[in-house]
Image (tube, rainbow, N blue to C red; front, side, top):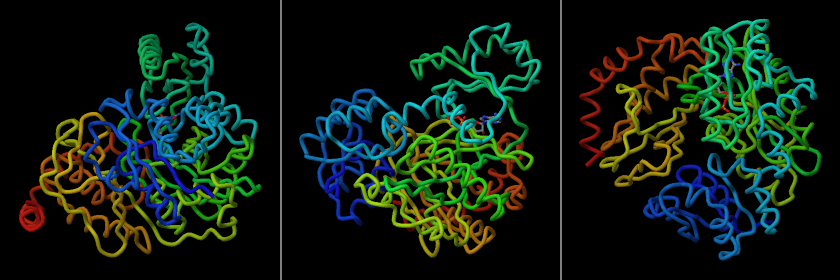
Amino acid sequence: MISKVLVANRGEIAIRVMRACHEAGISTVAVYSEADKDSLFVKYADEACQIGPGPARGSYLDIESILKAARKTGAQAIHPGYGFLAENPHFARSCEDSGITFIGPASRVLELVGSKTTARNIATDAGVPVVPGIEDCSDFNLCSRQIESMGYPVIIKPAEGGGGIGMQVVRSKNELKRALETSMAIAASAFGRQNLYIEKYLDRPRHIEVQILADNHGNTVHLGERECSIQRMHNKLVEEAPSPAVTPRIRSEAGQMAIDFARNIDYRGAGTVEFMYCEGRFYFLEMNPRVQVEHTVTEMVTGIDIVKEQLRVASGLPLSMRQEDVTFNGWAIECRINAEDPLNNFAPSPGKLTGYRSPGGIGIRVDSGVYNGAAITHFYHPMISKLLAWGRDRSEAITRMRRALYEYIIAGVKTNVILHKAIMENPDFVSGRLSTEFLALNNGLIEDMLRIEQRDSKATERLKGAFGN
Ligand code: ADP
């Protein structure tokens, strides 16, 4: 059994991983940048090593410094969290070569799923449907002809990409050349590879993904689906489990597709198979070979600690459950609370939290890496916390989330709490009419935010007075 884990990440996910370690009796090592020296995760860890300056390139992305810290502290395993090096095959291989357990799948598997085109071929092999697409975009004329026969709109994606970076929707032939050129340039600078591929752009699909877990003893299970259709610029903002569009029969079909995909590549650990769901059909999108930001909603409805299962698998133990043991109870919703201004084109709002009090009470979970007085720095993604509400059904989860958002006191930076309030009151959201175009189609949200801000202002001031500074 692993007895010491180094967490190669920061913020809320570093604390999330350390919490699981704590419960499992595993001691923890934090690595941190100069900018994070006062961060909560550094204080939470049993040991901590500073590994470099604020910019991630010299710290959270510096493989050598992280391995050095692991050797120095005697950590037997590294948990990469999400983002940074979590999907980097070179990092996983460096761990393997140094005799340190990488808590995730093998570097070979990261390589396979790191390419969206390779992953599509694996899906096809496993009998999992994919969106119609074009994998070779090097010859413009050929590519343009193929699109004509498929029909516009299409979406261009960097083949080795992520985070929505470099993706562009193209609606007509005369936009194509320019779009290919700009995506190629973005792909080259963001991912070091310029290859692109093109998919048919589906009309108002839902984003539905399936959580899987696989051990070294032949057991692969799915933990049901998450709906992540509320997105801004292809990035998730609100997630829920289960999906309002999924019945038990659809759940076991999607679950089986995810398991088939994972089995096909001998997958180990926790992973997510992402799909677009459109007119009653699933289309494979990609596999995320790591713990995801939104794994928490699945934990709330299944009661399974996904990070603890990752630790078990990394230690060579079997998963603590079989498929028939997985049951679903109630509904969970997550709001990603960011330091950004939704009334000013989501401009990041770094700064010091001069007053902070997170909500509580029945059914609420807050995963965060901040405290009153902590700083949100411009070096990293400005996420403050993940706020979760659980209810016996969707309607109770929504009402509880509204109540929690009302209680949330964050002073000193601008936040998107007001947007989440508007979403939780939106009739389309409340009735479960969701698609990835939800935010783009709901122009009225700005007026709703202003109205809600006005409506809640007295109460907010009162609470700030009591709990802020
Ligand atoms: P990334 O890895 O950069 O996050 P994904 O391939 O996972 O990119 O897609 C992110 C989001 O982009 C999806 O959740 C969806 O909203 C949108 N998207 C991607 N492919 C399509 C498609 N073929 N049709 C419609 N929307 C898409």
